[in-house]
Length: 593
Image (cartoon, rainbow, N blue to C red; front, side, top):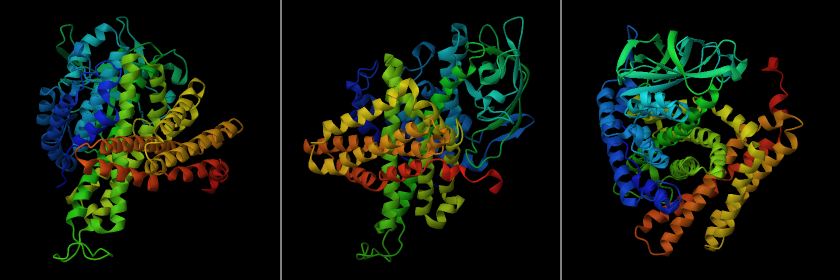
């Protein structure tokens, strides 16, 4: 059976040594002293390893139940959910005014990684509730906030988002779900939604659905979409639950992974709904939830990679197979452990360097969100908007790849369900698809985000990299050649790709869109290169000042060197593909496929 241990030491290193949270001029950050965050992370790690992880494999094998229209989560989930609620974990970074603990997003993200790594299916129930609550917090009336937020933040009630319909996924302008206005100001919602994660279950007293629908007579297409609050049970004036609303589950999906989370077909039959935000402005409100969810999904990609890596590393150290080509390293045993072999080392370092760099990227993104939301910093808002599709697309693509690498370390055992490695791969796979498939993320990045506000956010990112390189080039010669020079080269590749789009995209948009996926990955590698350069600077400075635990800092430097030498050069490959333009992609006629 797989195991999981939360990487609290690495998280603490990033929060306090790399990002120096308490020195940031962001409300609430001054209170994030190392001892305080360590207590939170340590307790979260205990819950992840002792409460959630033991239910991961059993929940995967059992799946959710569906009988007589009722959905049940796997055995043990209800008791664990009650324990999570009792500890206040679902509201860790939600407003105190509605029952939350008012922690910054960066702490919620750090804790969320541990919970997702231990049991992604379970954590989705509270994660989706968090997203729905955030949408109500941003766009709801005060009455709606007072009605729905306290029980949702406590997860007494849970939440969902309902976008996809059987005939339309990404193109939401084609949706048919309608919302007929009523005299009392409510709406009657009718239609069907599919792929609704945590759509129904036995973990909470009520489920609050956020449903996209069209009000008759509104504008055509996406401009006519509105967002509605549709509770499973009606809510009385005193907050108690009333009659069952016209909401039912048609079926639950049988999926490749996340078996412990109920993915439902939801039927709305003249159900009562309440407008959230403005009429015909539903996408604006929904994107509050979607953008949060995309960062949460980026976290899932990283989390599954971490869990898979831990188990592949343990196997590589324990499994005896062959002899090191340079001579036996376990002469008293029948063979050497797998980890002595160069290709196994390469595999493990691919995983380790991605995970540790990706964790830094994710926490940097969470810090930017705090900076934008808590200080009103427009520059931070623009930068995280630019980086969101990169975080989501790159971390989930690479996270999935790393779970496959982890399987490979175990050989045949990686393919056998008993060992649990396939679950990490199956669970990670969905992260590349939901909350906007990664191809759509790439199109959003190139088609919208690069040119946003006249392209100043992309230029700001380039300037950030340039300034970092200039300020740190003199740390020492090894650091310059091993970190600064590769980062400069990768950043130049990214600039050249953006320049190609600018020069060719106007003449033929396909030249840009055909290279969008490569651009997303090129950008992701540059971001991880920047993270590793910062991590290495921090580690080298710690060593130079005589900090304890030299092994930890030296391991950071060694892992970072691997990423810069073996992973970051992928930017040149992506640039070459981008500069080939659209012709290799678009020249084959559709009927020739």
